[in-house]
Each structure stands twice: as C-alpha cells, then as structure tokens.
Image (cartoon, rainbow, N blue to C red; front, side, top):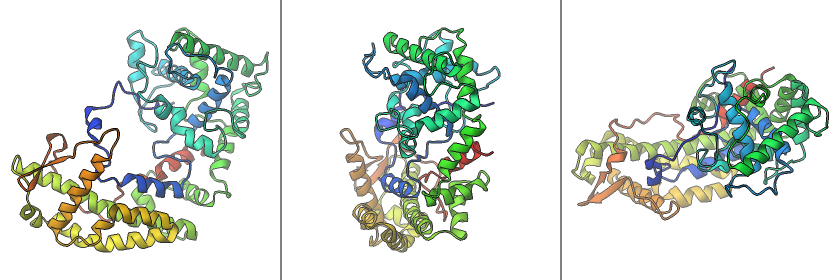
Length: 434
C-alpha cells in the first residue's frame, strides 16, 4: 500500500516572494477554461479518497465549531488533518509505506515526529485552510454537495460516509450511535480534535490504536466497494455530461500527458459542447506557448550575454523569436474565434489582456510589448507588486540571476502551458476502478 500526503513546507522558497509564477499573467484565463470544462476539480487533486476523509472529519468536528483554539488560529477540521497525517506517517514503513505521488508528497510530517514534536500550526502548512487536504478538495466537496462553503455537513455527505462505514465495518459513525464501532470512533476523534484545539498540537498518545485504524480506514488508494461505486456514480453523472464524457474517455487511457490526452480527444468524435471547449483550450494554449516561449528565449539570450544588455538588434536575429513573431497573429485570431464560440466574456478578457499581441509589427516590437506586459503583470501582483524578471539597462534588458535560462526555448506545437484538470480526473478514475 502507498500513502500520499499534501505538500508541507517550513516556508515558501525565497523565489516565490519574487512573483516567480505566471510572469505573463495567463493562468487566470486558463483556469476559467478549465472550470468550464471540469467544474469543481482542481489540477492539484489526485486522490479522491481525501474527499471521503474530509467528510469523515466534518462529522467528527461538527460539534466543536465553538471551541476556542489555544493558538487562536487552528480549526477543528485542521486538527483532524493533523490526526490523519500523523496516522499516515506513523504507519509509514510498516504495512503502509509512504510515497510522494498523487497529491505532492512530503517527508515533513515524519521529520516533525522524528524530532519528538507533534503537528501544530507552527510546523504545519503556511495556509492550511487552502493547502490542507480539506481545502484542496473543498471545491469538489461543495460541487458534489458533501460540504458547504464553511466546511460543514451538506446534503450528500451522509451518503458518502454511510458507504464508507459499510465497507470498513464502522456502522454507526454517520449517526454517532452509542455502542457501535463507528459511534465509538466518532466520539474518539471528537475527543482528540478537542484536545488538539485546547493544547495547540496533535495530542493523541504515540501508542494509540487510532493510528492504525485511521491509516487503514482512510488509505488514499484503498476505497471499498460501496464507496467506490458511489464516488464513481457521482463522477460519471450524466447530469454533468462533459465530465461524464471525459471520465469515460480517460478511464480507457494510460498515463499519458494532458497534452497527449487533449490531442486524442480532439481526434475523436465528441459532443459539441465538449469539442468547442477543447478547441478553445487548444487555441489558447497555442498563444500561451508562443508568448511563454518568447519570454523564456529573451531570458535565455540575456543569460548568454552576461551583463551586456539585450538589445532590439539581438532579438531581431534570433530564430525562435522570429518564428514566434510570425506565428502569433494567426494563433491570436484562432484563439479569439474559439473563445467567442463558448463565452463572449472570455473573449473580452482575452482581448483586454493579450489583444495587444495580435498586431505587433517586428520581432523587436513583439519583445518590447512582451517586456512591458510582463512589467505590468508583476506590478499588479499582491500585496504591493513584484520585481520584473529582467531589468532595463541602456535601452535593453538584463535578466536577473535568479531567472537565468541556460537552455534555449523551443516551439513545440501542441504544448500545454497550463493544467486543465484532466490528470486529476484520470487519477480519480484509476482509484475508483472496480
């Protein structure tokens, strides 16, 4: 058996403070396209059983919302996450080895335990409500009516926990019925969550039988028959026809990349709504690739020049930039046409943010537009803007050392710059295979 943990870290790398992500501001529109394709899913999702864990935790914690945490920040659901992750780490290396796959894995929990410490706000995630597994899976939990926006019990939660308790022999958990195995587990979890809130850290004894029970009952890859059937029914629901169509297709696919999956999807017979969205994604990604590769190539050329500023004459001689410049107008036109077919508002956003690149003149004009655009994107990043990757010097640009690019960029048709949740859906179907 293999376990997966959400990513934990002491702190974000220094580079994240520089605004190192999305230097051209293209991710937001990509995410809106992904949402139109697979609402409720997120690219970071991999193991759908964390949805079940979130439901189990919500029931255990539902009577504790008014308990004031001693650390003034932790919540009942976060304290439940500490219990689950400590259970996984404590059982790791025994009959349930830990691996870093699916949801990004981490050795952080084991490191905390090895130091004789317990999970607490100070050594857990910087933003646990966002990056803990309940936060990661909350959009899906809300979409499937398992949890509400406050992470409390929603209409279909009991369907999921009842399927889970049948598989695990934990009848009575959902109803909290006294004298049952499930009822006793729910009471035990509630007591441990309360203790964590009051003490500011996971407080269950190191020798507790709870570790084995939790690690086995919520193992990310070991859903039982009833739980699998219910989750699969929800995912392949004909009331969500595009998701159902994609799920059935991906269920038959191997572990190909999202780019290969998109290519295969476009090559086959698809419903009209799905095809229009796939074409819009493909067209938008063609633009994103040309702009992203151009920006990377500018960074590469500047890296090769060292401290000498990269000039308009330098970029005009570069084949990658010249090719991208030549292809961009047609790519922009196609993207605009495809976006208009599915949502006029998306076209407005696309034109407002990137329309300047459709008629850009020479290659050096394109690079000048690109640099001005990048500076504007960085300046708008919270909380007070971020520095550009390249500084202007003597009529040219010099890439800052933390953004040096040793390799030249390549223009590869069909490249996906952004994730579109297809890998997440494929992972769900793999875990839910009968």
